[in-house]
Image (cartoon, rainbow, N blue to C red; front, side, top):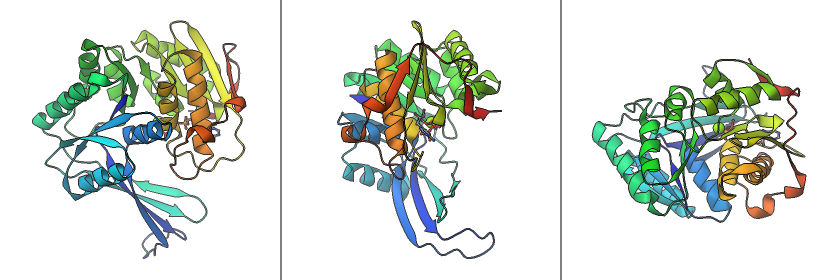
Length: 315
Ligand SMILES: Nc1ncnc2c1ncn2[C@@H]1O[C@H](COP(=O)(O)OP(=O)(O)OP(=O)(O)O)[C@@H](O)[C@H]1O
Ligand SMILES: [Mg+2]
């Protein structure tokens, strides 16, 4: 079972609009609501892969109730942590030409008691978990060291941790030796405070995160592929992609692919790449089922192309 933790989930409302005109009334031609959050996406991807998952979520108010209801309708088990504040509602404006504008709300403030209940719920739910995937930003009230505390408590009970977050929350958690961290290129560059222009730059940055405490680094580099660096070495994975439809949630799908394949080594990297490639070829934030994967299109090599210039460099 893969337990996911999303400290700041959301109710995502997407409006389809012909085009955006600042200061004008924009009439939507379509509307949809989805449960949102990085760990929620990982749970959706794990479910699509046919594996069991439980999503731990602080939920409050009417938006929180709707998130629980929508996940339940998708067959995703939720371990809710009731909070006094209301779960945030995020707005996305999807223009006809494909441009997506997002407005993300800050979310509720979690009290000290709610923070502790969240940690306690993770502990309780992790008894039959192979992995805990901790994903996304922290809501107001949670110190940057909150994930570090979660990793320390999980390791005390022997559960492995995958962490997909950024900034101070990522840096603080490294000292507790998470089993894998999954930065994208911008998050990796931010963590080491340097730009990335080649695959070799990304390998060096990943090695630095290992030196800071991460046991393994799975770095997703958008269209450039993915990199795995662990105690045994480094591997680079790419996949042939015919048409990119939507990269929303591709990183979350990759992390799910890595974990359902065991969460270690080049074979799991291949699964991460296959899931990321399949996700971008599906519309919206749809997550791939096994039938959507094309393992024959995936290449994983220990001969990492260090000099390869990134198509999507980070300055
Ligand atoms: N344009 C693209 N072409 C081909 N593959 C892509 C493209 N964008 C993403 N991918 C695949 O999906 C993986 C994850 O994408 P990315 O690195 O953008 O994740 P991310 O920024 O963490 O995404 P998110 O957090 O929104 O889910 C990539 O490593 C790659 O395998
Ligand atoms: Mg990501």
